[in-house]
Image 1 (cartoon, one colour):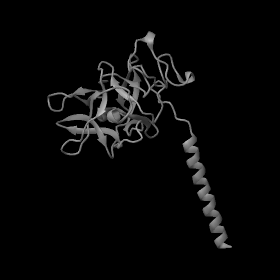
Image 2 (cartoon, rainbow, N blue to C red):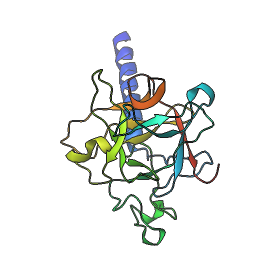
Image 3 (cartoon, helix red, strand yellow):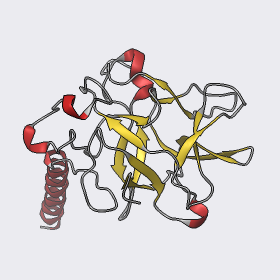
Image 4 (cartoon, rainbow, N blue to C red):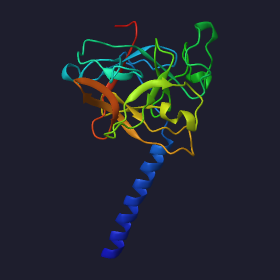
Length: 225
């Protein structure tokens, strides 16, 4: 009797786990929301800000770690500074920035806003500062194994040659998001996965892969601050 009860409890527990896993797989992806509760769209400009102000720092900009090119993504220490705005590009965008009259419809029409495609969580995308033609790119490891985020990537063209140019936005806890590098646009590519966090170097706050301390961020539509 005891053996039968144990088997029954184990079977029920296993079934519950299977159902939860199946539910998670089939669950639709959630749209990424800005601070006003609006869905992020490709082609629009946003500030990426630290979700917690004060010592957590401010928005993102560009600077040179070595006084020469290429320049890397840096976070302002002052939380009141919003930095440079960015826009997002999905894998099949024909152009990361198009004139308003020539914008390309991407995906299902039901998911499109006025400007472009809705940005969903855990979806491969390029990130581009609004005044810079190149997109974010994960740099090669330095002498200490650190991998900083730089610019110089080419928008679109998913594949082996662009695998370091792709990032994702994922929900991080109850409030805010994190930016992740773990591209799935190339099935045959060897990829490195990790969250983006802050690495302190020479008193500056540089965006880089971080194993244990993701930067919690929020998104603010440019022009609404």
